[in-house]
Length: 285
Figure 1 (tube, rainbow, N blue to C red):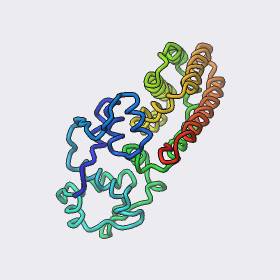
Figure 2: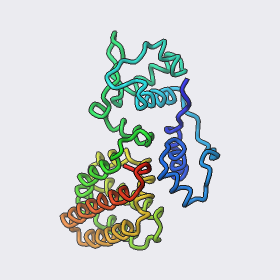
Figure 3: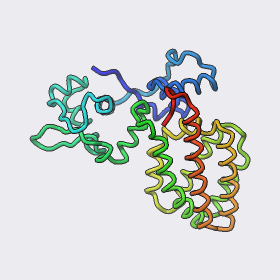
Figure 4: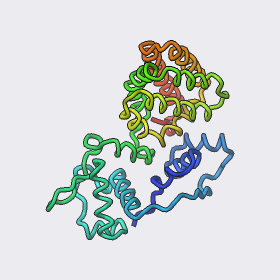
């Protein structure tokens, strides 16, 4: 029987706990070095973070996803029969059926009556549920995954920023103005930047933007904490917050869109510069 994952349960823990769990379940030296440097923890293997136990169906779903990501169940292969698979996963057959229904809903597998269950190409057939699960398994993400996420943000952020400034200028002005007073610390910038973008999506009038952004909720603090280690990244964002506040004050939606596009492009350049500066064996995406 496979070991318990714990990623889903960890979603209920504090942001710092999620970051530490991330380190425990990956082998990414860059992030281990980051935690050792900024917390003083030298032996990450000794950390015992309490997390609520998973329900059986959640545990089964987690083990099956891990099996797919690790290649035990390759894309386009068929899963073993229900009896064999329930033994492999370590759950009852009714619990296994519930887990498979969850996976089918998100696009991991295809269930057809009277036929074996097929493992889908989740990169092409999956949905936002797959994305939410993938960010719980950073060790199995493609090397350029973070850069790809930033490219998606480049496509989305200018639009939801413009809409939010046009619909709720006073609210966006007040929120962005807070960014001018942030302490010069990576953690403060990471937390505020997430809150700002989330509020922009909530105030843009299109809830789909919020649903998409929430798919990155667990990955964002980890990546942002690394990104904002660079003074240039903090300065770029501080200037963005100040300029956004001024544009919101005049309800300049097109100007806010142009500003967001410029800053999102700059953030990609800064991240790529950070990634390129890391040793080959420890480079993030």
